[in-house]
Length: 521
Image 1: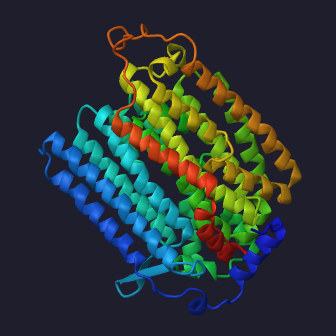
Image 2: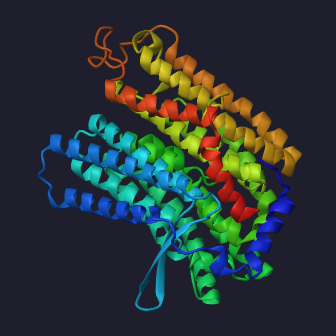
Image 3: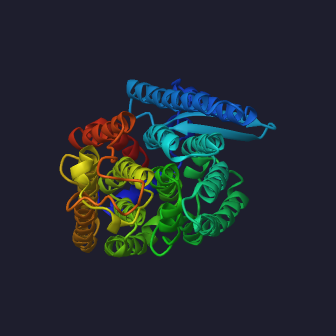
């Protein structure tokens, strides 16, 4: 895989984006059938959660079985997309399907390598969320699952739509079910405060995005991604529009100093909500960067890239060392998520092929690993009703399976060789080193903080004398039980995927490199 300097890479984007490169020849119409499967998946999801809404008195056992088999079906259905994608040439950038409404407006959906892996990640993560709900959600399970399927429907639409304005609508629509999920099924009295943090912070950034979109629509008369890609936006207008679009996506990531909402939301959210936040919702901001900001506004990206890298590095340092001072398990992993997301942004805005690829892979690896860590914290909370770090010690003695999985995902979180994050962070290092040696050195130093709080956390939980008296009547030396079979199978599958991405990275890089090369080189 070649490495390109930042100026050369963005220069090639400019050549593609500003010259007349042939809309019909460069962007072929629908030639493959796998995009139709995405549309069918969206419709089936809608039918299923409407079914849950219309029939509110279904027995709890039947709701569990139906929802579990439904999310499994959608996950395996999404793997069919990968099968069709691999059966075609990776150099075919995107499969498109458009519907024309009212004779003038066309709504287009498309799937390329960037969207494909996020779609598969979405369908897989919701399998874990549904399973975690069976143990953690004691009341209103049907309404909880309804919100989960609604969020999945909106996320799949966000990752596949090619209309910037419809993307904005779906991007913001995810807020409402997440607000309800945290507000009604949160764990403590501060859950409403956390829900409002999530809602208001994201809404604040979205106002700037809306203004930028309206200005684009007034100038160009369209929000279609393909037409925007070949449109000629002046240098001055790009510099004016870029900050508003960037701010909306940066808050969703979240970047420093707009990160305050994430630890609050993680701490108060139910286990499924925390998994969705870490594994999927944060990725919406990164997907917005890759799909819209970088290819559509290349001049602005080149102009502001140093500014973004500076604040991303500050976010990595800040969140890594703040995590050392936390005592809530969810809050520690939340700050770990902030560090990794900002680390990935250093790769994306290095504007090199290695940096872009590494930043994207880090999003996939983080989605698997952080989801597993939040799932494990949820397991502890379901058994002991506490997330305070000081209450735990010696779990390796009584819960060896839990301790083993927690150790594996902890070292995966710090990019241990052979894991998904190792390949991703190595590519980010290569991209940052070519673009800016100072940023390369700083992110290398920042890893010390990440490694420190990871091993400190595991040492406090797994080793020492086992404590069974902190929650009277809940846990006793004889009453502690390890992971269930279902929990163990899900974590084992997550671990295998993490190893797959670390040992056989070309399994993902084959499609991803071709897609990124096509759009950015």
